[in-house]
Amino acid sequence: MKLREIYNNNISKKISFEVFPPKEAVNYRKLISELEKIKKLNPAFISLTCGAGGNSGSSTVELARVIKENGFNIMPHFTCVCNSSNFVFKHIKDLEELGIENILALRGDIPIDPTLCCKDFKYANELVEFIKENSSLSVGVAGYPEGHIEAENLQEDIRNLKKKIDCGAEAIFTQLFFDNNKFYSYIDAVRKYGINVPIIAGIMPILNKQQIYKMTALAKITVPQIILEKLETYQPEELQNFGIEYAIRQCEELISENVDGLHFFTLNKMESSIAILKNIL
Ligand code: FAD
Image (cartoon, rainbow, N blue to C red; front, side, top):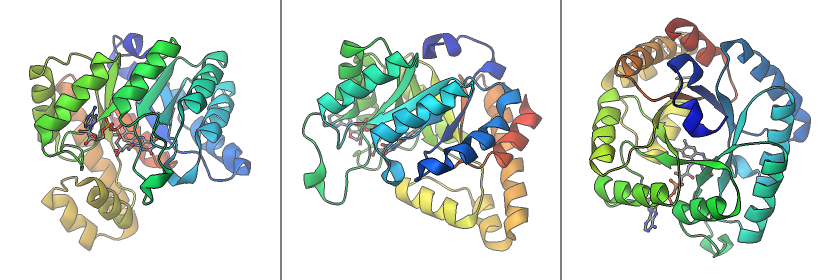
C-alpha cells in the first residue's frame, strides 16, 4: 500500500515503527524476533534507516527483503549524501523488484570529511526528483518542527521542504519532539506555505538518559523541564516508565487533534512502543 493510501485510512492503520539495521547480518534474526512482538498491533509499515551507524544502502535493501519476507510492509530509507546516481538507480530498481512501494528519501548527515560526499545529489529534493523520474515508488521526506540544524530559521527550512514536495514527495515524517505545541505551530506554518501532504508525528519513547541527551543535543530539540527533572532524579526503570506515560499523553493529545499518523523511533527496542500503543489504540 502506497503512502497516500495509508494516510487516507483510520488512525489504527497509521502507526509505523522505525528500526535500524544491526551492524552484523547474523543479528537480523534477532531484529525479526523483536518485530514479531509488534505484529499483532498491525503497523502500517516498518521503516528502516540507512547510512546511520555505518550501514550502506546495500545492507538496507538486503534487510528490507528479509523484513518483507517475514510478512511486514517496509519503507526503507535512502540517503544521497555519499551515494552516486548509479548506486541509487540500482537500489530503487531492487526495491521495486521486491515489491516494495514506499521509500523515505533523505540527504543524510554530511560526513566529518566532506570530500567523501558524492557530487550527484546535494539536497534531498534532488533525490526525490530522481526517484520519481526513475521509479513508481511513493516517496516520504523528513521535516523538522524546530527547524533543521543547518537552516537559518524555520521559514527557510519550510521553503526547502516545499522543494521536496514539489518534486513529488507524498508525506512528511517529522523529527522527534516532546512538546506538542512545537508540532502544532509547525503544521500551521507548513500548511500556510501551501504544503498539503500528510505530516506524520515522530515519537521517541524515553529509553535512557544518555539517549535523550545525545539525540536532543545533536538535533537541537527542546526538552521540557519536567523531562529534564526526571532524567536527573529517576532510576533507569522509573525513567523508562515515566517515558511511556509521557508518550501516551503526547500521543493521546495528538490523536485528539487529528494527527495524520504516528511514527515511533524504536531504536530496535519494542517494549516501550508496544506499551504506549496498547494504551492509545
Ligand atoms: P534536506 O531536506 O536536503 O535538508 C538539509 C538542509 O539543507 C536543511 O537545513 C534544509 O533547510 C537545507 N536545504 C534543503 N534543500 C535545499 C536546497 N534545495 N537549497 C538550499 N538548502 C536546502 N539520516 C540518515 O543518515 N539515515 C536515516 O535513515 C535517517 N532517517 C531519518 C528519518 C527521519 C524521520 C528524520 C527526521 C531524519 C532522518 N535522518 C536520517 C537524518 C537526516 O538525514 C538529517 O537530518 C540530515 O541532516 C538532513 O536530511 P534531509 O533529508 O532532511 O535533508
